[in-house]
Each structure stands twice: as C-alpha cells, then as structure tokens.
Image 1 (tube, rainbow over the protein chains, first blue to last red):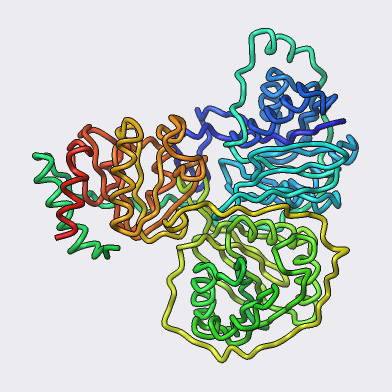
Image 2 (cartoon, rainbow over the protein chains, first blue to last red; image 1 turned 30 degrees about the vertical axis):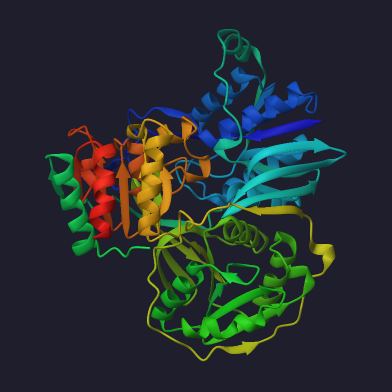
Amino acid sequence: MKVLVCVKQTFDTEAKIELKDGKIADAGINLIINPYDEVAVEGAIQLKEKGVAKEIVVVAAGSDKAMDAIRTALAMGADRGVLVQQDTAADEFARAVALADAIKAENPDIVLAGHVAADDGSSQVPTRVAEILGFPHINVITSIEVAGGKATCSSEADGGTQVTEVSLPAVISSQVSWNEPRYPSMKGIMAAKKKPVATVAAAAADNKVKIVEFSMPPAKAAGIKIEDEPEVCATKLAEWMKNTVKVELK
Amino acid sequence: MAGTWIFVEQRDGNIRKVTYEMLSEAKKFGDEVAAVVFGKGVEALAPEFAKYGADKVYVVEDDVFANYNTGAYVAQMVAMINEFKPNAVLFAHTFNGRDFGSRLAQKLQLGLATDAIAVELSAGKGLFTRAIYAGKALAKVEVAGEPVLGTIRPGVCEVGDVSGAGAVVKPAVAATAADVYQTVKSFVPTVSARPELTEADVVVSGGRGCKGPDGIKLVEQLADLLGAAVGGSRASIDSGWLGHELQVGQTGKVVNPNLYVAAGISGAIQHLAGMSSSKFIAAINTDTEAPIFNVSDFGVVADLFKVIPTLVSELKK
C-alpha cells in the first residue's frame, strides 16, 4: 500500500508576526513543517512500521524552500519526495489543483495531510484535494485502522468523538493529538540526503480568492494589575467580574 | 441579489448558536435571508430561524440527511444553488461546516473564505476578514462568485433583535443513498455539563501554574460557578491534566468569549493567539513579568491556589 503525505512549510508557531510594506514580513523567521502535517508524516511512518504501508511519498507545493519540509519528513522516515513548484501566493483552490495533479500521478491508497495549516488556518486544501480526486475524506483524525480496503478513523468533532469508515483510496487529515511526531535521528538525517526528490511544475490554476489587505489586530489597552495579598486580589477581581464584566452565576 | 443563505448547523435537532449569529449578521446586508436546513424531522425547527431573521426557510427532509454526510449534503446544495441561485451561502466554521464549505467550493470551482471573523456581502462579492497565524495578524480577502462562499467563526457575530417571515420552502430532494461515501459508525458526545469551548460566554483556563490535577480542580470549580467552559494552555494539556480538545492556542482552539480567565498561564505567544480577542481577560499569575498581563484587562499577581477559593466565595456573596 502506498501512503502519500502532503506537507506545507510554515512559520514557526513561536514566530512574532509583523507587517512590512503591507505584507507579512518573513525575514529572519524560522520555518518548520506545519505541525499538523508533521503528525500526518508520523502517522504514515507508524502505518509502515505496522506493515500496512509499503512506501511513503511526501509531497509539498511551494517554492524551493519547501524542500526543507520534504527533507525533514524524509529524515523522519518517509521514502521519497515530490516538490511541486508553485508560486507561494497560490490560494487554496490553486494549491489543491496543483497537489491533486501530482497525487494522481502517484496513485496512492491513502493521502494524509494536516487538517489545517498553522499559518493561513484555512482548513480547505485536503478537502478540496479529495473532491478533485473523487476520494472520500475524513477530517481531524486522532486514530486510524486500515483493513480490508477500508480506513476507520476517530475524529475530534465538535462536542464529541466521531468514528467514520471510508473505502480506500481516501484522503485522511490529522489532528495534532493523533500522535507524537519523532525527532529525526542523525542516521535519518544522513539517509534523507540520499533519498530521491522529484521536482515537477504545478498544474495551471488561477487564484479564486484575492487578498485585499493585511493588518495587525487592534492593540489591547493596558489593563489593571494588582499586586497584593491573595485575599485582597481575589476580592477586587470578584468586584470587577460582577461590576464590569457583569458575570452571571450558575 | 438573490438572497443570503445560512446553512443550519444542527445535530439531532439541536441548533448551534452560531446559526442564529449568522442569520442576524446576514440581515445587515439588506438582502433576503434564508436558513437552509437538511435533516430528518427538522421542519418543526423553522419558526426558530424566523425569530432570528430568516425571511425564508429551505427545509429538505430525507433519511439520507439524517446525519451530516459530505456526499449527500453537497449534492443537495449544488442542486438547490442551481435552482434558486443565492447570492451567498455561509456555513459555520465547525467540524461539519468547513468540510461542507470546502467540498462544495471545489465542486463548484469557486473560492471560499474560511473561519471569517467579519463579513461584508454585496452582489456577487464578499469581503471577509480572516485571522491568520492564529490571530497574530488579519487578512481581508475578497471572494467573488455565484454564489459567494464563506465559513464564519462561532461567537464573532452578535445575535440581533431581528426577525423574518420564515416562509417555509421545500425544495426537491436531489440526493440519494448512492451519494453517501462515508459511514459514521458512532458519535460519542463528550460527557460534560459544561458548554462547548468555542461557544462558551465564559472560559476559565488553567496552565502550568496549576501544578497538577488539584490546581485544575480549582479552575473547574470557578468555571462551574460561572457556567463556563474549561480550557488549558499547552503545558496543562501536555502534562495530561486536560484533554487535547480543551487546548486553547495556535495548535488548539481559538476562543473569543465575553470573559476569559487565565489561571497560572504565563501567556506564551501560541496561547495568546488563541484567546487575545476575548472581550474581557482576567489573569491570575505569580510572575509579575508574565506576558499574559500585557493582554489582560484585570490581572492579579498572586497564587491561584489562594486566589480562586476566595474569588469563588466572594462571587457567591
């Protein structure tokens, strides 16, 4: 069984975001694999360790910088990579078209991806890819069982846990609580350098969504801060909650 | 314009509040507002939507819609869009809503703005404000299309004092069991008397300063007094004191309640990203330098183990 994992290169979640000339400044920002995709890579490796997956292919779309995300996944244990060269300004539609085109050529049984990217927070691309490929899709998974040509997954749904079954091939997108991604070993990092990575051009697709402007969230005005005996602090906090916030008690 | 459609988020007839928020918000754009509800035995819900601004209610009842499933819901919505040609269709940015919106957008080869925190609609165009980098920056995006498609974050729009005629329209059922490609084997609700984290008016969160389950118990005690949801920072989730579904922050939930109480949370940038848009923020932390105080409206530099018990008894007075 072939498992394909889509990964995206994103800003480190600890990065401080600033604007420069009306755009998000990227100078000096540490780049990482989107944490949700990293979990998908780990999930694929665990499927291989269980003997379910035979080969793991990592696919990223973007600039040459995305090669780092592919190499990290290869160092963790994926077998080979595909870099789809695409303008980083591609929107969710154009990105999904490009990824789906590259995925089709690989003919995988399972396509894994993070359910959302920590940068744009769109949570669209895996679902759009599934639609283009005509595959079923399970979102926000925290576990997977693969047997008899089917995948059965638990998902973190709103207000509960949902168990969903689909026939393969399918797109499955991960929640961060699915697993704890391994750190690449030194041996893995060395091996990754020798693993093959193909570079392909993106299928043509125009953006559907236009970014009008970036801005920073309104700054919060400085609040009240009290340093006193805990009982005094608690009494004043209670007064503020009652009089300013107007909380209602259960 | 030919109407703004709000897709109703419901499970077993229980309507999520975000549906009402979207109906009220849509009313601001002058266009006809319609609630669209798919399900089994859901027609009785129609008057509820009128109370919040729905001029029309499209009701589609069939066994195939008993529970949300992507294939049948998308097939039905595509048929209805082709027949009635709405100007815009908005979904809640929830587990089901974002799946529905994304799959529908791709099927129709359209753009989609997800997780919007503000929306302005006009004929054939939508301007959506989105929080990117989990709220560290904002992006305003334009989505043109027939219809304009977007998903709206729960809790960002106010439920208004508006009403509509709520005229029921029953479009033909356009989906069959053959459209269903997922089998939901089970849905187990989280057993909690507390409100859902992303919908709660008040959230009380505990962090590293809780030091363990005993500290979390205090957080829960305060939460229950306030009818609040309980949340946590990454430290308390990674320590296993709270389940992952309760994590607030960049790789967890983004919340924007009326009141957010951060107990023993220093305020790492990933956590601030998930809660700093809350209307009121209170912080309890022993470290006067903790970054949480930079975003809090009312901060107390003190030990939560001593503050919370007194706070609880003072609130009860």
